[in-house]
Image 1 (cartoon, rainbow over the protein chains, first blue to last red):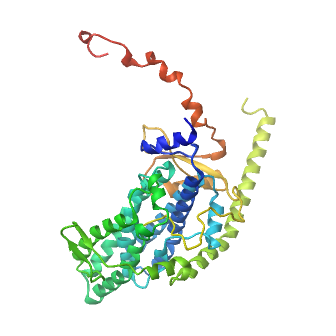
Image 2 (cartoon, rainbow over the protein chains, first blue to last red):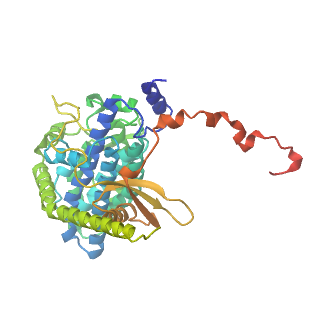
Image 3 (cartoon, rainbow over the protein chains, first blue to last red):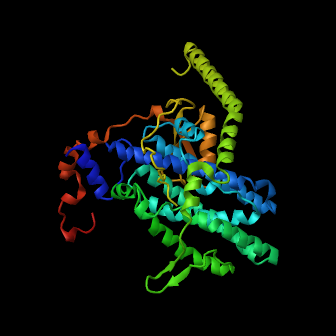
Length: 321
Length: 114
């Protein structure tokens, strides 16, 4: 069996490809790109929510939000680790993000204007992420799939805490309910855009499906998300900002309106409301951490030198014989 | 949500080279966690850290935020030595020696459980 046949047999058998296996260079490249973009999204995704940590309405909500943002950092780390198994360095990937050569999910280029946005992000943005990530647990690449299993367990908390924020707001004063409606109005369409271009316009869906990196198409995932989310909006008593949204008995799915693809591409190209801010902030945070990294490296060098001296001294004294 | 990056017109899907070199920065550590007493440590992931103490602290913060373990190990990734998969797969004798398996021996039913 050639290495290529072996690879294809593993994928066909629904088994996982592991880092030391032979794999086509394009498979490796596709995974590096996708996992890096996923990791960058987790890391940049801390910013819109971090914006509300100091302004959370109660200490309890602040603690929850801090735990959630900490989870996002952890998710970024699991994913960079998965990317590293493919032979690329984390520093290298981060540098590509800083240089603007790597992208992250466009959803994080929208601002968080009110506390209700924190609810909407958990409910809709994390809801959309879960829809995709549950699919990715079945991805053919072992380390990515395993990372997704861990992440999905934690995302459930993210979505539920967000929805609960909106339940409370919708049970509150008319102003609070209006705040929730405003957040839904602003986050609904960008959330649908998270699933990417239509299948007919998606450049590499077919190959990714063949390699079982991707298991469900963009449009099918989007439909799944809409079907799941509409009843949840109904429960809140909120109105979806889409006049075309309607249950289709025949299809057994909701019909919904067309996404504004001009807006989608504008944000992907770097001209969304927050693109420049997000990267500037990320680079600034990295630069400002320089002294911490230096101190940690100096401390590590000193302690390992001291340990080496102790070992040498112990050997000379005949200790351990 | 899709993480396969939308390509702009004229953009190449190739992996770009950076000025940063792989291997720069802190060393990589493999993290093993014992989920509860009575079972072995299992590999759970990896992370970068400058020294063993920081690696342990980071591993605790990253991998056991929800009580996933009662014990943690960190090992420098460079200290893990492994067979290539084909070196194990080619060790076919293991599968040919069926007499190593208990189920190859016929024991009469009257004897009972053995």
